[in-house]
Image 1: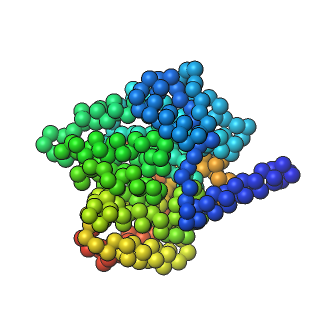
Image 2 (image 1 turned 30 degrees about the horizontal axis):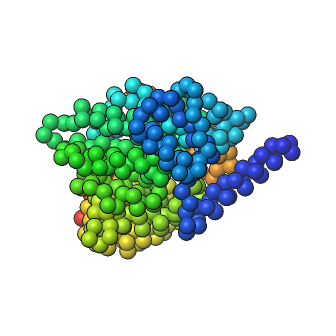
Image 3 (image 1 turned 135 degrees about the horizontal axis):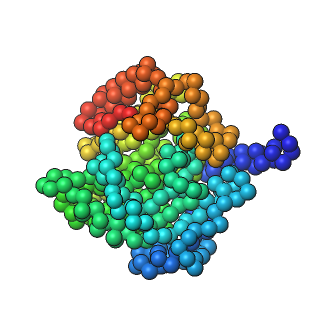
Length: 371
């Protein structure tokens, strides 16, 4: 390894250490992009102009683009491109294709998108390979049109569920956009639709007093402390997320949000001493959710594709995440794509453990699925 390569590696290690240090601090600081760009189409939208005003109030570095093309996201290396993109927030209009909603079983009936991209630095990121180009965060300024479009997909005389966090973590952007609150209130006014979103963030205060009418399920992505502390840079710690989950579930008369809640345990990994590590997580959850609440669990084991592995290794070349194909078995989708998943034996041990923990500690909760 030449001196310049070594220097680059050391700089990356130092940068990732700073991210993890920020994560571990009790006073987590909200993400602030170094660059916020607005397309002309976005500035034609009232919601786009509202975000522009918020960005001004936050003294963010704003650029008004001359056309609707986002440039300046690529650096000399993949790592530099990643760094530039992750510090860029682009306010754009959702393309026409975004209005053709797709089903997303088993999470919900349909998925729709408030934004694409996420400011966190999770070294197993599921968006790797799912979105095209550098991983900049794009917020859609034509939000009212996006919300109105969901009406077309309601099922007749049946509750229809909509997932809003397939391609983003909407709470991570709320302090800049305010779009999640608008979405929750919109679904709160519709009697036969339910909204679902999941987050690794804890800045829930803007959501507590909304008129959601029980139509939004607030779900928190959790993991063992050892996994989150090592692989989930740029996010609040697990204990902070659990406190947010508790407050969102508490009745409004007790200062809470009165929301139905959910725990998304993902990605589940058989790390060394994994039973002890995950038992510790369940202990903390049980202590904080010690009251009647509408609670669900979604259990997702770690998996990766050849394409996502290549992207993640370019973003995090020194990751300690185990993506060794020899330790996995392959699973094919209906299009012939390959995923590397844990072996049948490993899956059996994990599934039995997690189901037993949940059934013993939270007998009223629903386990929605294991995958």
